[in-house]
Image 1 (cartoon, helix red, strand yellow):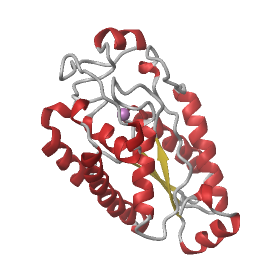
Image 2 (cartoon, rainbow, N blue to C red):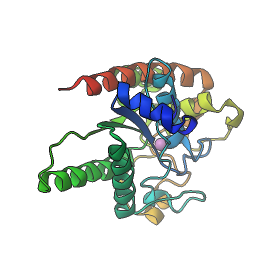
Image 3 (cartoon, helix red, strand yellow):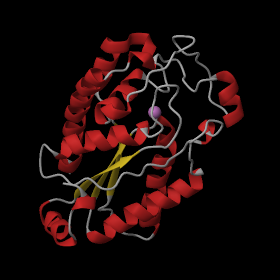
Image 4 (tube, rainbow, N blue to C red):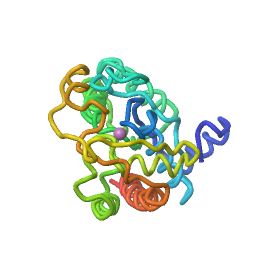
Length: 246
Ligand code: NI
């Protein structure tokens, strides 16, 4: 069940059955020569819909802009500053809390978001704690690519060519979601270099085509289907455990 495709009456009725919601969160940033700029948002959104299809689960609107400053030397990237992103998360969480949501599960598609999302949770908990409020709100950050089944399948499919950015696994899942947008591109070198991430100009100097350590020419719609199914299982299990926590 999607929030965006529901009426307020349907959401009110849902809150009588569940206090949980899945919020996909991603980024709008370059993903190398054959990866879609929306990859990090498309993957968690698609997987969240897959999880929701398994039960009475509400999925909120995708937060599709995140922390992407180090990709800003590549056309099309859009970023928040950390302070902006924290403010956005606080307002989104505060709105959901106002309606009675108590378990907010952020399904993330971008490693660069982790520190800022975690900080936003800490800000919110600190505010509630200092106000002496009874802590009923609980937020969780989960990465679609970090579950046991998903990691194992990515390792089997790509080994060391998975890399760190513009990975064949995320490109595959985005192709599964949007087969009409599959791209072909030459990769030179076949596996991209690795190194530390600093600012945007340094990133482009070190990683000229945008990839880090990966060979996304291995990506395919069929791999994307398998990774999608693995991640849906991982996330469904983790979300159920989150709701069941005492
Ligand atoms: Ni990505």
